[in-house]
Amino acid sequence: MAEEENGNVTTPEAMANGADNQPQIGVIQQYVKDLSVENPNAPDVYQWEGQPQIDVQFNIGSYKVSDEVNEVELKIEVTAKADQGVAFGVELLYCGLFGLRNVSDEQAHPFLFAEAPRLLFPFARAIISDAVRDAGFQPLMLEPIDFTALYMQQREAQAAGQGEGEQPVGNA
Image (cartoon, rainbow, N blue to C red; front, side, top):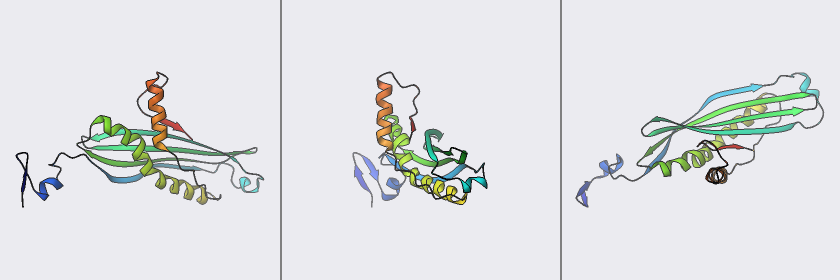
C-alpha cells in the first residue's frame, strides 16, 4: 500500500530505492589491494636473541569512485628491527568500497576518514597477524586504534593552522 507524506507517494519499493532521501551508508566490498611481506635475513633471523623493535605506521586515503561510491584505503606498514638487522617487514593496503547516498560532504568526510577505517581495521589486523605468522614469526596483534580521536586531532590541528592537506594521516 502506498502512503502519502507531504504530497509524495511512498511505497516500500520506492523507499528501498532511496526515494525517501534519507542518508544511507553501506559497505559494498572489502579487499586486499596490495600486500608485501619481507623476511630479508632468513634463515639467520630465526637464531637471533631478544625481541625486535616493532614500528607501525598507517595512512588513510579516500577516493571517489562514482557519485555514490568511495574507496577508502587503510595502509599499514610494520617493520621489526633487531640489533642484527631487519627481522621482517609487512606492507598492507587494505581497501573498502562504501556506498553513500543522500549524505552531505560535511557528513561524509568524518565517515570516510574515521568510521570507515574503524570498520576495515579488524580485517587488516588479522591479515597482518597471519602474514607475520606465515613468515615464521609469532603472530603480531596490533593494538586497537581510535580512528575517531585521531580524526578529531587532525581536524583540530588543521583548524589551528598546523595541519596541511585535507586527509588525516596517523602514526601508531
